[in-house]
Image (cartoon, rainbow, N blue to C red; front, side):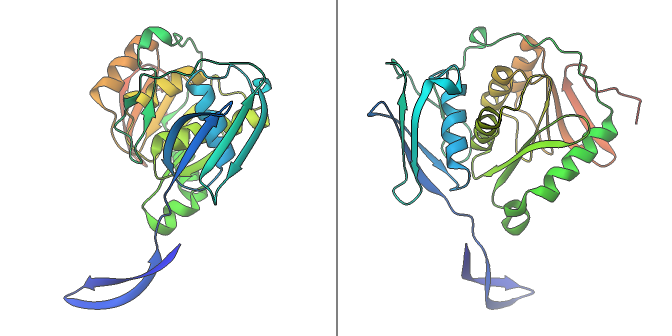
Length: 252
């Protein structure tokens, strides 16, 4: 959204127009019961809802959703399932921007990742470059996060949100809606790799998570337990590997 604001530059103040990131609450109801309120960007909201419900294990497959109605104007999503479900109640406020909430953080609840995926550093550099090229809102405002699901050669899905965790939820939701497998793929992010994001990757079956910034200590510890490769500070000529062996070091 374009807005006017005062910019101070070179000791001179002037009114300019620029892109301001949109953020709004989205209340999710499941079978008529209020489940959670997410602060998010009003982009791909259907993907956000589907991905969040799957990653939180409210649904096991897309077939369990009988009806999905999302209203950006009302900031409301109504989900009707094909069965009764007991919604989780122990909420964990995450470190994610946008006010992230998760209900599951015990690594024992997540699968051990076993994958033969191996990528060259140069392939990771190119995929991150592709993400920046595809993330239009990020380029316009620098106030939003981008994420992508990719293989070694191309991007498969791109999503943007004020919350980096929301962007991952959108990736998963779009993958479910389009029938795109997430196992043995790469998860790219413009934001920090937190423990919550790492566990989302584990649930998705993703063996490699890469970011232009850093992971948290807890995320690295979880990655070591779950068999996930974590790459941070991904730059054209450098990267850091904090856990795992999916990156072929020494091979461009």
